[in-house]
Length: 268
Image 1 (cartoon, rainbow, N blue to C red):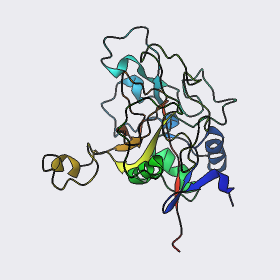
Image 2 (cartoon, rainbow, N blue to C red; image 1 turned 45 degrees about the vertical axis):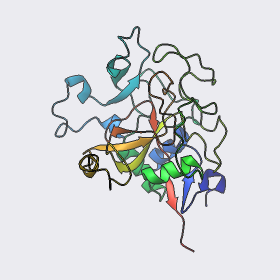
Image 3 (cartoon, helix red, strand yellow; image 1 turned 30 degrees about the vertical axis):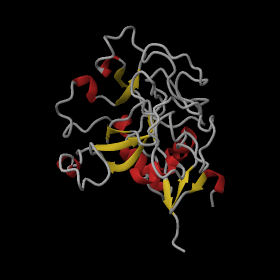
Image 4 (cartoon, rainbow, N blue to C red; image 1 turned 90 degrees about the horizontal axis):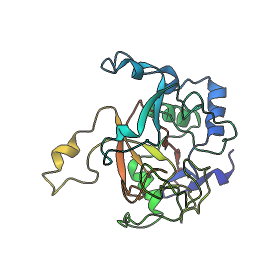
């Protein structure tokens, strides 16, 4: 039986106190011989339109650009890097050696689900994740002020990070204060997968006929990710809030994206 320190009881479910770390994912791979999507490469039957370099095994990596054209296309700082994967999150020349306590990244939705299944758990729904991040608050805060107890971007994105929070990139899990539920890094550090298929809006569309058609159709092959990351900044995305959300392709790993798992609590 796992130590109760590893997970926290929320309303109706248990949740990992931190994002899944490299050491935990390595144990899963060692036990199962699992090969991640980034190591296998995209399915050519599903991604026939990709350019040749993006058909190679790899993941998307954030790279500080030499210059930026008015913060336009994100392709100025995001690059598909062949050879990037959970063992080499920045590309073949990088390693997770000595980084056991850092969140595992460059994993896909299927990879995260496979790990959760191995643990006898699941990934959280968007509602579960947001409820846990709010830590008992009835509504998600609309305060766009940059959090002090989180790993986010200080400075001019994407060129200059002053590292006032102690890190310019990923941080080991648990470096900042836990929320009121005892959960660490629910905001900042890495985005986290949920099981929800992406829709432009969440909530009940009743009474909002202009939003209902868009809510009715979930985007194929995309999931809702939550929590922001070390790249969220006041002058760019400001997604370091419990209510913030964005889409992520199911089969694409990224250097700022990880996950945590949940376990439904038994009924009394």
